Length: 368
Image (tube, rainbow, N blue to C red; front, side):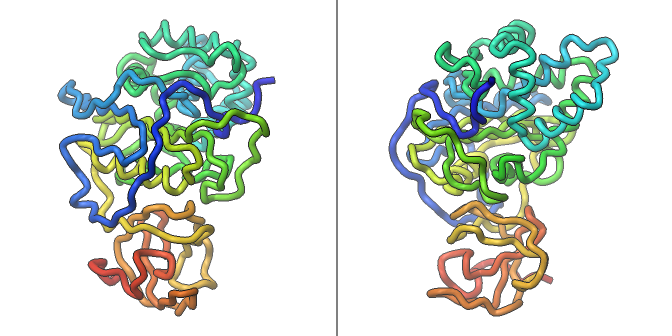
């Protein structure tokens, strides 16, 4: 038995800082800075590598170890494919499991291969094959918990460089093809479009990770976690490639104070990602606005009777491109007939739950 889904587990692989983050509203055009801006209370490891120039544009704690959460699924799939050459055919049953593991971060699939292929031996093999320097198997006390693999931002860049520059073409095309089709919702009900997926438009591929959150991640109710697990800090990671031809590799690992809600960690990680210098990245246009309430629905039109396209994590920052008049929504203590359009969701949210309290969002244009 491989253990409980480790997105809901924590370990002491990295230090925990106390404190809390801040919320703000800003435009996408002003989001880029010359160095990583880490929100208060957050522990971060960041590496951004420009493959076109061969230079690092960001490095912050590159060798600080974090528990990998679902980022280790990259090593699991690479290990599976390592002995299937030269054609790298994938049986239908395995393809179905691996597809959902990579696209929707499915935990059951990861646990299946972790047990089938020797657990920590997967890590040992991949460390040797990929030349990783600070990646280690889970602690001896938790051998079955694949999300307890220790990993760093620098080693994550090495994993992506192997995929892009050394892996056989069928391996590269299969893995990166799936990462380019990442679903908004993970199979455990968490919205995984934070960080890279929230900040950039068009060309990006992602493998995200999250661990230790007790509240729903926005899409649906999460699977209950095991009782008695030692709780430390919530972890949220965004990794992947950005730009045409996978120009830039981005790896951002974060730990948050114990008890941090998913929406706040989601927003803090996304703010950190927005501050990075990412060559080739096309930033999504609009204004970043903080939401309020939980279970806020994104709808296809500016009315409560239209189709529900998604549900926002509680108190998350969202990108708004425009707003329009629609159905009057009576809230307490607010009401509004204006609806904000969220381009990343392709739908509308009532202004009752968006912004600082005004009926109409200041500085946001009307939808044409």
